[in-house]
Length: 316
Ligand SMILES: Cc1cc2nc3c(=O)[nH]c(=O)nc-3n(C[C@H](O)[C@H](O)[C@H](O)COP(=O)(O)OP(=O)(O)OC[C@H]3O[C@@H](n4cnc5c(N)ncnc54)[C@H](O)[C@@H]3O)c2cc1C
Image 1 (cartoon, rainbow, N blue to C red):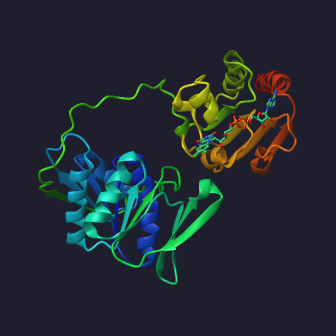
Image 2 (cartoon, rainbow, N blue to C red):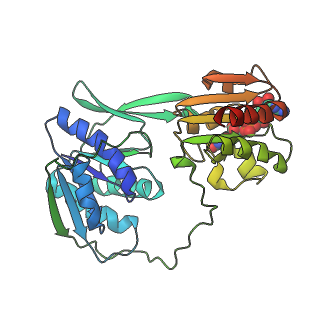
C-alpha cells in the first residue's frame, strides 16, 4: 500500500498522482489520509485514492508529534511500505519524526520517484541544484517527501471507486504546547500559483524602477511580480512573497520573464520548471541565457518599456 498525507489539500492531490502510478505498477492500493478534514475525502477518491481514511480528532492545530503518532498507527495497521508526505514546513518535520518513530529511511524533497528493477528509487537536487542524488532504500517503510508542483494532480474522476473509512486515533499526550499561532504578514501575492511571472533582479538600480516589471506583468495579464533573493532579502524592495529560488518559492508558471537576473543556480532551482523562460540581461554571457527559451541581450531600461508597449499594441 502507498500512503499519502499532506496538511495542504492541493499537495495531497499532486502526491496522489504519483502514489496512484506507483501502486498500479506494484498492484497495490493507495490510501489518502485526512486528519480532521472529512470533506476532502471524496475529492481524494476522485483523484486516485482507493481508500480515504478520515481521522476524527479533537486536535485543532497541526502538531508534528501528534500527527506522527496518528500516521505511525495507520502505517502499522495497513502495513504501508511507501509513504509520500507533502514537503512543506509541517510535512518535513512530520516525516523526520515519523521516520525516527518507525526507524525507517526518509528521503526529503524528491523531484522524482520511480521503480527501478522493482526497487523504489528517488531523485533529489543536491549542491544547490548542481547535481541530482539518485537513492534507494534499504529498509521498510520508505518515507519520501515531495515538494509542491513536482507532479500535477490526476484529472478528477467522479466515477473512480473507493472507500471512505472513518477512524478515531488517540494521538497521545504531546510533550509541547502551542501557545500562539501568528499568521505571517503577506501582501497576498501567491507566486506559486501564478501562470505568468515577471521577475526582477539586481539589474535594477532603484526600488521605483520595479514599476517597469509591474507594467509588463500588467499587460501580460499576469500581474505577478517575482524577484531574486537580493531584492527581497538584502534590499527589501519587495516582500518575501515574491522571492523565487532555492530558499524562496518554487514556481511553475506558463511564462517566466527574468529581468536583470544573472541566473545563479539558486535562482534557477526555483523557476526551472516554468513553461517558457524569457531572459532580459545586458550581459550576453549571463548564465540565465543557458536556462532561457528566449533571450534579449540589452539594457532592461530600454527593453522593458519597448516590450510592454509592443505587447500592449498587439493585445489591443
Ligand atoms: C544558500 C543560498 C541560497 C540562495 N537562495 C536563493 C534564492 O532562493 N533565490 C535567488 O534568487 N538567489 C538565491 N541565492 C543567491 C544567488 O546565489 C544569487 O546571488 C542571486 O540569485 C543573484 O541575484 P541577481 O541575479 O538578482 O543579482 P546579480 O547576480 O547581481 O545579477 C544581476 C544581473 O543583472 C544584469 N544587469 C545589470 N544591469 C542591467 C541592465 N541595466 N539591464 C539588463 N541587465 C542588467 C547583470 O548583467 C547581472 O547578470 C542563494 C544563495 C545561497 C548561497
